[in-house]
Each structure stands twice: as C-alpha cells, then as structure tokens.
Amino acid sequence: MTTQEMCTVPPDDEGGAHRAGPPKGARTGDRTADRAAVRAFRPRRRIPAIVVSVLLALLGLLVAAETISGLVGRPLRLVPYDGMLSWTSATSWSDPLVLLSSAVVTLLGLVLLAVALVPGRPSMVPARSGDPGLVIGLRTRTVAKALAHAAEEVPGVHAARARMRGHAVVVTAATSGWDKERFGEEVRDAVLTRLAALDPVEPYRVVVNVKEPR
Image (cartoon, rainbow, N blue to C red; front, side, top):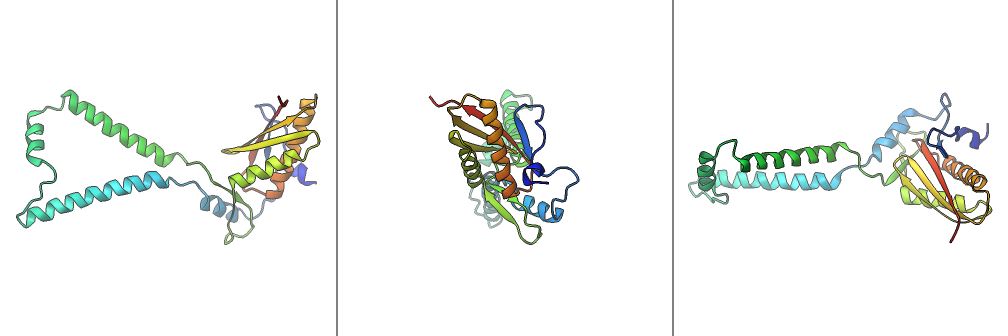
C-alpha cells in the first residue's frame, strides 16, 4: 500500500473534502505516545487564567490587609464598609440595581467558565514519534507553509496558500487552467502526500479551492 493510499479516504458529505490519516485498523504507532503528544500541545487559556489569578490575588491581599489592620486597631478602610452596610440595609433583593448587579456577576462567571472549557486556538500540530518520552510539535504556520508549497509544486498552479482551521486545512490555489476539478484533485493529492510525510497525530480534513487569477 502506498503512502497516498494510506492517507486518503473517499470524499465526505461536505464535497471536495478529504481527511488525512490512516485507515481504521491500521497500525498508527504507540497510542500512548500519540496521547502524550496531544496533551503536551493542547491549547491553554493562559491569558484568562492570568487575569483571574491576578484579580483573586488582589482580592486576597485586600481582605488580608483589612483584616490585619482591624485586628491591630488601625483599620485601613480601603473599602467603604459603613456606606455599603447602610446601602444594603436599606435595599431589598428585588431592587433593580441588585438584580442587574447579580445578572452581571452571573454572566461574567458564565463567560469565564466558557473560556476555561472551550479549547484555545492551537499553535502547534502534534506529530507522531512512537516514543511516549519524545513529544514532537510542528508550528501551525510551518505546516501551513509546507502544505502551500506542496500545492504550488503541482503543474499549472501559479500560487497557493493554506490555512489551518481546527482539524481542517483550507488550501486556495490559483491556476489559469480550465479544468478546475482536475487541478483540485491534483492539489489535494499533493497536500495529502505532504501531510502523510509530516505524520500528524490527529486526522485533518483537506478542502481545496481553485481560483482563476484576476
């Protein structure tokens, strides 16, 4: 079986799209190594985590400062407790301002939860090594450039660009030929062959758009 046969499957329901990856039942190497590579390069939400950590740290410092200053008899009163106490004593739970504040805090919590659960944008493409102790990652820009270069090597293609979108590779090729379907198949085959050489852990769907240069 050739490399191309191992890395292509018939078009799926979206038309013009193929998935790059080994067929079912084929030996794909050590699954433990594959899982290790995926975990190592899983996108992380660093910026939201840093923001939440800083806010919680500042809140903790404020509470500690107010508590310690109150214990020594010299309260800092960085927070206007008296005014807040009088306001809360005279305000009911059904007050519009209370309801609005509660809704804003709840919405903010849901947004932070969604940000934490939804995976970030991947910056690395895990590649197979066969060894759980050896983790290989390829930059998405590097992979996209390699796939675009593979498309440009197809005769009749003047220029090409590739973009990584999740588990899909979108390749746009410019050609002056008339048979766009044939060019699309040749570009797709070239991209799938280059993907097979890179040997990514996860399968990628390849979508090819052929355009006439203006």
